[in-house]
Image 1: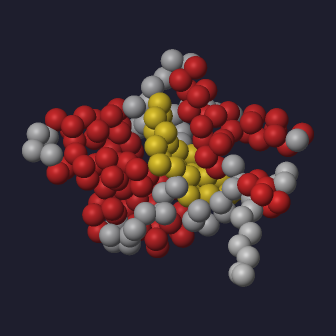
Image 2 (image 1 turned 135 degrees about the horizontal axis):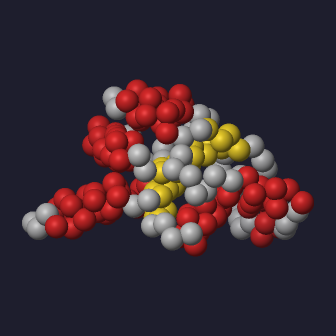
Length: 175
């Protein structure tokens, strides 16, 4: 538990700065938890912030595109560009399609041009790994991410499997 305090301090270090974060690591190492701490810190200091699972964001964009009025889509895209701190959670878990790559490029490029803080969490092993997962737009996205966000490779045991979680796993028995 002594490492928890140190991890929190590391997570909050630079939270008020415009630089982003690229948190990568296996599931359960605390990427999302630490990202939410940064977002909460930003809000507590008067900055606008949004944390959203990337797959959910893609669903919101698709839904807005299907509607006849363009106002909702424009509102979503404007928010993604203008919010002080944007955190995209679990980038790389989405289905790889050209449309997804284009949307991710649009978001990253918009944040890059506006010089706004971007935090990305991913199970990818690094920017190069994410680049290959994205496809056609991967090189452009990775180039911007390398400049915008220092990588934080998080290595730890899956916390979901600690403190008795293994005992609570559902066990199926064949009769």
